[in-house]
Length: 491
Ligand SMILES: Nc1ncnc2c1ncn2[C@@H]1O[C@H](COP(=O)(O)OP(=O)(O)OP(=O)(O)O)[C@@H](O)[C@H]1O
Ligand SMILES: [Mg+2]
Image (cartoon, protein in one colour):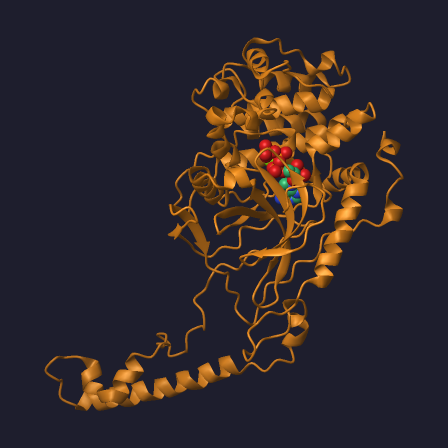
């Protein structure tokens, strides 16, 4: 139904997500524009990755993918595409990610290569530094209990680096490669094309670590600087041989304008021996930034909007359409509901706020009751079981079991215990938000094939009514006047 990339698709709903047009596809999945439609009218754009149907029926693969997505949800960094949710409906696994209004590095580089051009060196260098910062955050990620998660991407490649129209680079698809590696024994064709980014220790099934992603990032960097593939071959075996033994020339051999210091860093990240290689993504990122200087996100964003102009404009238009057609309310009839969140803030001043006042009165009543009971107790004989509730009789027992016990100073407690404020809604032009998750509880879920899979069920984030999460604005449409006619104008 959705398999053809570019084919228009009718919306369908999986869980609380509406799935729209495909925006890209890879070896394992098709990626769609999607929209979270929350129960109180909150909505935001998301990207939804649907496993290809032949893979979706592999329970071991899907379980692993879900587990990996769960780990990826612990990576919180502006240079990483946020993993928001995983839904599994009728055996169909969908990964729900933050939507990035941008293009993959692969797309940007290919578009220029077609015109015989290469990305400007300082832009590439800053894109790669951003990706490395994101990778470092993943390598350092810890679980909720503070334990290191030892995340390694394993599939750093130009396809998995998205460069946003906001100028921010984001790494995509954490954990997908680990699940996909299961396929390598049975479906080698699926990972074809990725071999040339794999580190020697990875192809030899030796110990991998952050240094493995450093290698893949450096292959990507080398190729983007030179506009040529580094490890080539007519078949997988030849490519592997090249990865393990082939010559690795300096990028300056093909692109002499690459600064010496930058070329040296790329080669240091391509040392075959992991003990000799630059081992930390952060160290490499800092080295790159020192070698070429920082380029502002605004300048990178301008460049991306120009280079990907046609597709980004078309997508922005489509997103605006989807935004207009999104139902703003879907709350069951009869339930009192504030206005949609976008206008809730405006309406807030007009809304009566009875809850707090009622709570205050209730607290005063309880305070008086407890004081009276205390007075009585000081005179009453202590009952056999010693329980103050028994001594107080039914009214006192009720007061003691009150859901709102008083604080030491006699004031009523806050309505909600203090909770960390919910993450700000992310948009294409803002930093990515943390996953909208308050609790995650693994629950066994029966699958259509009769086997049980562990599926993460997330409780919906609850915002206090008086302080709603601001609605996510649609990704910024780029005014046509700001853009030159073609990407070639830039170079
Ligand atoms: N979160 C996202 N926001 C915006 N676009 C995305 C997002 N995720 C993926 N895409 C688009 O979808 C394309 C396909 O992604 P996908 O990960 O399925 O394929 P791939 O990276 O080319 O191959 P692989 O299967 O090896 O990961 C990407 O290149 C990108 O253009
Ligand atoms: Mg990918």
